[in-house]
Image (cartoon, rainbow, N blue to C red; front, side):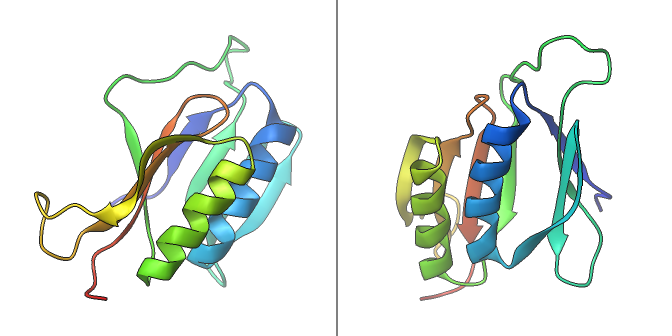
Length: 127
């Protein structure tokens, strides 16, 4: 349904370290990098997650109620992505674990990136 998702950053170097670390366990790669943007996606695919400085040159701000959801193939990948996110400047918003109020196999973790954007990493498969 989606072509891509874009979130703003005020510090591309810090964002690159955060997203490089967090996306690796999910099988995502950095496809493109410009001074004002970084694009991630599946190997052999196209960038679908963009981290950019806002085009209007104003400061990037966080959207209240917005969460970027990244899918993991396994629960250990969720754990690894969460650990990498925290190690690279992310802030905990919900440690890895089951969230059965969503559905029986919803295993997810929530973090804030260095700019405050909320990111969820989730596996929908059984253990």
